[in-house]
Length: 130
Image (cartoon, rainbow, N blue to C red):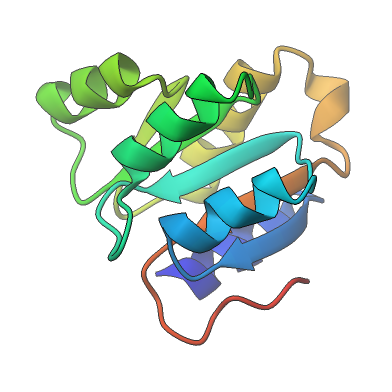
């Protein structure tokens, strides 16, 4: 769930901002909020993660985006990449797996210290910033 993922990111030294769904996430970007990396649940209400990524990429936003899916099937990873995501994580997300994917998309382990991370998921009431 979103709160566990936020806690894991904070354990890795990340600064976490959460949005309740893809529409809210898109509005944050359009208002000028920026992040070093974005994690998005691909199955969100109002606007799913695939549509969110398409719209962000159409706006020229090139931030690394990691798709979170219910499982780690190869076809889920393919669909995430085809939508414009840089990486994919299947649930449940382990701390070690999260670190590896973050390091992979950031391409520089030094940047893992304190990056600004945005999480977009379907957990209601979890849109506060940390």
